[in-house]
Length: 233
Image (cartoon, rainbow, N blue to C red; front, side, top):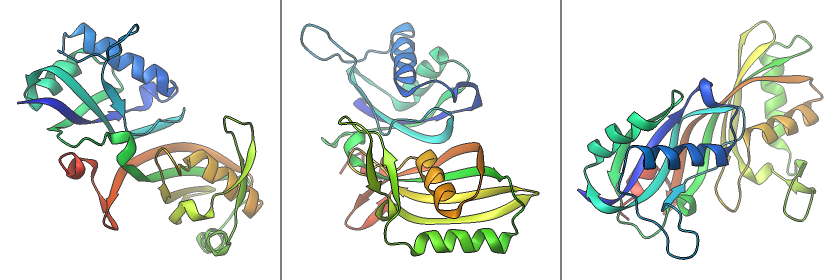
């Protein structure tokens, strides 16, 4: 039994084109509909005490999203999962939940993400040629892209935010790119922005077929950890 839970959920193809704020509203409505005893903030406009780990870009699927919820009454994690899934639409599913005791919420703990991106190139490329382009990109000390901010568009060096990446040929002009990127509230690199930079630096015409977030990580003492592992630090 616990009054605070951290849960993991997936977002499938059915809902990949809805914005992050809409996903939040779907969860809020589902929680209310199935009568989960969620705690609310104080003040003029009370909100559910629900915090998501990392916003999801439009077009992104994932089987490794995390959120924290504070409850007004104790619940077993298994009961929470079953009850909430009854209220969620197809394309969203809670898979795991654990008791949470850490004062740090999930948004502050996420520091990295792993992605799988499938893309097509307009000009035929061999596996060796694509591998060389990835290698050349990672050799650069600076990779500048225009990133939107509250103060307007500005150039940002994303090279320090790329921890690793590799590409494998699927068939024809289609490739699969695996990328391990900085993530979180302070230094977040989206998968689509990485692909924009890769297209820009390689001079390739790239069409993204799919983007999938495979995992989110927290880091403690220079070690990458599953967000459940730091739910009780």
